[in-house]
Length: 229
Image 1 (tube, rainbow, N blue to C red):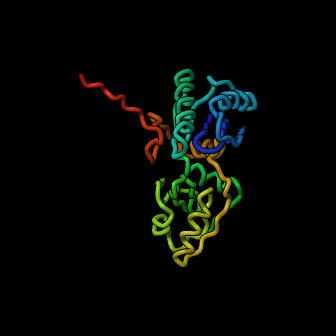
Image 2 (cartoon, helix red, strand yellow):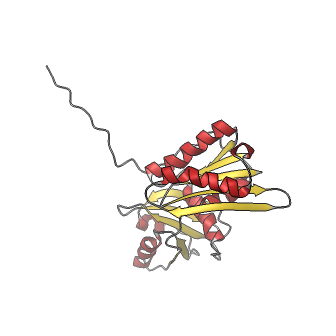
Image 3 (tube, one colour):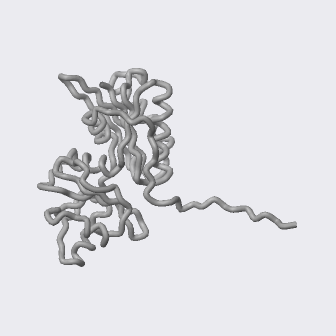
């Protein structure tokens, strides 16, 4: 099984190839922090990880992409690239939300919470992208666009750790209510490496990749005034 995974949903651009058989598992991944420029950076990354893996695009079985939440432009870039490559290679598609990928990345970073943990990303305007996961990074709740105070009410009593850029916001809201949370991995991003592992373990495909937007776009189309005659 050869899986290509792509992520441009938040503040990084990453591509990974996972080549797995019954005996071996080889992962080749690249990731770069960037708020702008993933359109230009993604395909060169794809070429590089394919070369490192020693396979061609035609050898891919599955192409995976994060679906969001995240930036409107970033989410679309990885999905469009995955769709285009699948058309050319006839590979199957797989997609999953960005927060679940961050939960898996948490485990790959070596943080192993003793019980459920939260993923919280600062979504600006006093809001969080928020999810809750068990100690195996399996989803329990979310993803949601939610205010920190409202997120606190959804936390299991035993949850103590929150990862992601929104961790301090959620911890502050918890403290205001007499609770305690430990923020961790504040610079954590979704990663193609974690996505590739999830796609392999899932053993399934997604018929159509659709962006997961939890809030309306900031830009509104201009309505042209019609002159009355």
